[in-house]
View (spheres, protein in one colour):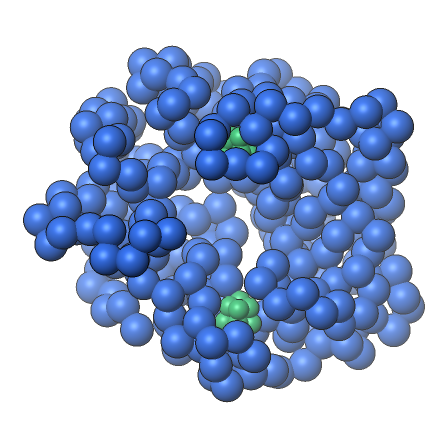
Length: 293
Ligand code: SF4
Ligand code: SF4
């Protein structure tokens, strides 16, 4: 049986931070909404536990999920399942990590993001040191806004060399970067060029909908976060029949969690077992040449 990579996003939609470009900034969910989100997560975890195949999971919440203990506890539980090869989550790293003391560090990983308008470099580094002490694997990411270039470089200097710092290109403005600025960011993240462009994907193969898919709180599965039509529901006993080789129906794919699944990118070779949490497999010893395309 092919292993599956699953992106899970429940009905949570709130965050403790207030990034000014984000619809979830300083939003809260009611207790009833959180209870619903928790039950969805528990149902998903029970389904994962019942699978016979290897499963990698990246939780990609709307907002910040780790501030809710039930996410930390559920990830800890999932990390010990023999069929779970990876349990990772996108997080702003503001929450306590004590609940991960009991987690399996081989399967647990964090996709952390640094938000310079919300936390200082020094404060963020303190959080990273706590992860280091707890032996939790993580990547660090940041959006490459011009006003944050200095902070990004400072962050790179202070992070352990073994920690990969990735930069997402600011693509809302076309031609935002001048060539020297691209070189500056590329010096921090040698794989920045991958995110700098939207990759033409129409009618080209993509594993989304075959060996990787997204799941929402009700179990509805979609190929990826960028194609809205459901392809099935994981709680249907015949769900596996919904998965098959497919071509992309979008014009382009511009997000790491999407284009890594295009076989022609060969990014699975670059990231290996760290594909979901965005940690290159040989970082930092070997920086291999991967052309954008
Ligand atoms: S930390 Fe992330 S989810 Fe929260 S407000 Fe900032 S961008 Fe939005
Ligand atoms: S190329 Fe991107 S948009 Fe197209 S199916 Fe794959 S992940 Fe989705």
